[in-house]
Structure formats: C-alpha cells, structure tokens
Image (cartoon, rainbow, N blue to C red; front, side):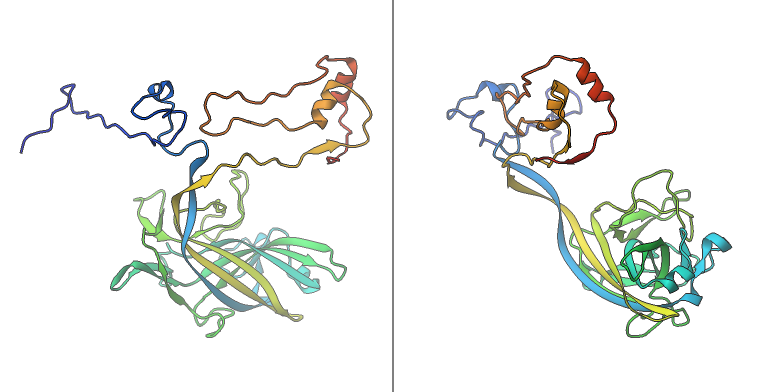
Length: 353
C-alpha cells in the first residue's frame, strides 16, 4: 500500500470545506465565482435568512415524587453547633422557632447532592448501563441531600424570616423520615441515554478519577466570595448551567404540618440532554422594554438620549454589503444643563410612556 504524498513534502495535509451554495450574494449566476466568495465571505453554513443554532435537546425525561416528614427536634442549626454529623440541618439565620411560628412555609430547591462519590460509605448512588441495552442507563439513587431556600410567611402573607435547610431523602431504614412507600431507602429507574452520560472529577487533588454524575440545574451562581454549608467541603459549587448527559431539576412544597412536624413533598425531573444543531429563521432582533426618568422637564441632548431608543447592533448575522443603522440627534451641543443633569443622581425611573 503506497504512502499518501503531500504537496509541500511534509506531514500536513490541507482539507478544503465546501461552501453552502445557497447564498444569493455569493452565487449570482451558475458556474461563476462572485467577488464575495473569492475573499471568503460566503458563509459555509447557513445564509442571512436561515441560520444554524445549537440548543440543548431533551431526549428522555422522567418524573418522580418523594415525600418525607421532618420534625423540628430532628433539625440541627450547624451555625451554632459547628458540626457536620447531622443529616437534617438549618443554617443561614433560620431557627426551629421561626419554623414553628410560621403560618406558611415556602420552599425552593437550590441544590442536590446525589451522593455519587462517597467511597467512605457503603450507601451511594450509581449509574450503570442497562443489561442487554447499551442505550439505557440504570440509575439508582440513595442518600441524596436536598438544600432548600426557606421563607417563613405570617398570617398576613408577609415574609418574616428566610434561611436555608438541607434534608436527606432516600436514607436507610434507620434514618429519619424513612417510609417504604413515600421515602424508601433507594429508587431505581432506566433512562434513554444514546450519547452517554456526564462525568465529574471524584477527587480534584488526587488521581483525577472520573465518575458518572447527575448535573443539578439549580440557582447557585458563580460568586467566589459566596460560601455556604456543604457536608464535605463547606462550600457550594455553581450549578445554574445546562450540561450534556443526565441533568435534574426539582420542586418542593410543604404539603402538611402541625406544631412539631411538617411533610415536604419533592418532585424530581431527571432528563437526558444533548446539544444538537437546528436551522431557524432569523426574523430580527428583540427590542427590550426601556426605563425612562419621570417628572423631568429639562430639554437637552443628554436627556433626549436617555429618554430615546436603546442603542442596538443592527447588522443582521451573515449580512454583507449593508450599513448599520445610526442614531442621529437633532441637538448635539453640550450645555451646562447637560452637565447639571448628569450630576443629578436623584432621578426616579419608571416605564416609558
């Protein structure tokens, strides 16, 4: 078998990509190369009216309801005792008394630790390929820790106290809140994952072993100074992003309560998500609503600009040979009134009339 030769007598071979062949500006006539195509301005993918978009597509999804009872004497305020030995905890300023005095309790799930990398414990969640079908992943969940943002609401519908709470679902038979019907020791289900699952580093400071993982799409932002309680590291990781593989979302609600205990229902949505390219029609840019100052009678160019339309990037994607729109002002002179307005920081802003 002969060896492939290259023109430049080296190991680099140049590959040429074809043009889309559907752009009117690049192909004014058949069998003729236009000046735009000659200078590599013809889009290789898409055209000014039909572009490609990469979006996360949900290939499979299941929903699961869990419910467990939480008693006030089972909760521990870790900010006071500074201990990590409890599975049901309070932190960020909320107390048992606040929960007991609340007329209603509103919950938001901000984070879930699915317990995939706990080698020190016999109980941990797992993802394996289903027997006889490599396109299915068999998921087993155990000892998941759900972190909730808590708002205590009075009988006048006022928020009296806010804080955070982490409680454990799917604990063993000896754990608090265990119930074989509503909060069993484990759940197992299959999910269609034709392009695989997501991974994470088990120990970033160790041998960098990769383990399968469920990404929780929560509400924790990327703030380097923000730290909270986590059982192992003492800090929460950013989780408000979409990743390829298996992802989850959750909702929580207090469905029953008395003086000492309340029941929290949890809905889990488990999804198989992959990024896929689609074609879409470009119909123009959106125009967001704009705030304008109220009760202002001064007339100057700076005020005209603040009250006027928003600046926008008006060149359409892949458009060639067209000029962008420009903002023209009837009066561009800078006066003392302009400076006075710029230094006035007491303006009130409201919707544009």
